[in-house]
Image 1 (cartoon, rainbow, N blue to C red):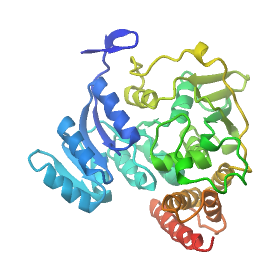
Image 2 (cartoon, rainbow, N blue to C red):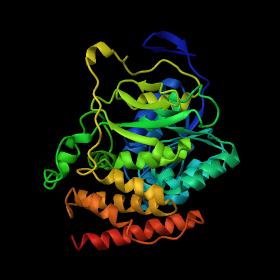
Image 3 (spheres, rainbow, N blue to C red):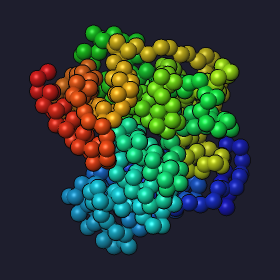
Length: 397
């Protein structure tokens, strides 16, 4: 079987059987487009509440299993697709079932937030390779996820553009990490690059959702505006690439062409570049270690003219410092900061707090003394408690 790429007709990679968690979101929709072109079979689809869109996907891809996270939405979906041979489940149990489905070979986890942790662990325990677009899985439960992946011998393939870039830059590197000097994550700077802390006090939800380069869901777009996404990505990189946070830097790169860089001990720097289009890292995760023609256009550097890099402003955007402190303390602190941020973003979207309060509430998660992370249940409990306290603290702002 063949398909047309930007350089002509080439062989398709071997078809895989794929479960997509978060199939109605931005990453999920793009993953379906990529899987379509690759000729992959879709075995399971899971979404939160967009019933009509998931019904459309079920009729197009005929998965064996479909999941709506919300129970009422699942009941509605079950009625809509009663004429099709598909099992409909709901809740966390449904997500974990989709992740561990026997027929599935690869699970693409693109759900938003902490809800992605248990399905990732379910997929790993079932021996599935995981294409990971849910950064909270590693932010909150990194030690447990990496231990499980090593024990089960499965691959964790990064889908975030920055981590995919680093993963690609490390191909062919000597074994171990002694040759690495640092990782450099790039950040677009979001819609508020160059603004002072005072200027950020009155920005609106509409302002925060205007990302200059990427088309993403609302939560991650707001995380980009606060630059919390870059702090969370630093924690994710610490686990994926087994480097201390002191060896992970962040640079603002407004053009979003250089997706991240690796500096080696000899001061050589290798960068991965491409147009700002998530279909590139999605496809690489799904076809690894093969490379096949892409539906994305070619990068023509002469059309860009110049590429710029800046140090991030930690005073205007303190979220990165908060995340560095959380991962330096380790244990349950990253889970608590992540949960506080998720709740604060939800409060901002509800109009209950201002934009700069998001980072202030996230920082308050560091004020508690937390015990070591002895189990996944400890992580889940820290998450629940941080959410409760964030809602409580928001009433005092």
